[in-house]
Image 1 (cartoon, helix red, strand yellow):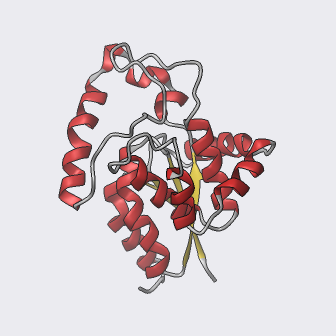
Image 2 (cartoon, rainbow, N blue to C red):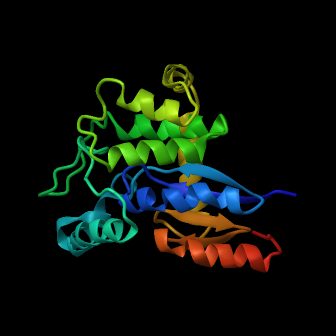
Length: 212
């Protein structure tokens, strides 16, 4: 029987991006179904988390994720445009968010079509690679195509769908699992938080009898 691993994941998180190669390989290496569970970025879910009074969190991420990307041999360009509209001086989140809700809904739709992790990998590599103005032209459509999906069909599906409700349910499930950050893997109700916890998850899968 195929085991289930849920991955709580954000399109604005550099650590979610860094997790994608291992996330995609997991179902190749074990008899597991890896389910993408998109959530909104923490900066949207909890704007106070990166408040001006606590900028050390943001400063550390800005320092850490590029060096982690270099360590892994991955591109490390901040998305242009940023998936969320935010004043990086005051850390204020804009009311109008033209990118992140669309991306998150598309992630839900990709998972419904059985291509969640592939879509997350292709889109995040586009976002955090060197693709300028990723929101224009065919960049997003090409990323979807590489994942085996048709962007125009997905756009129709999310226009009047219940994708936002699923995103909200994912956020509640992440909290119920005992965490708040991304990426968080959950296997049999046990959370594994962080891009660098995949080896620990693999160890747990093998403990539970799953063979490579």
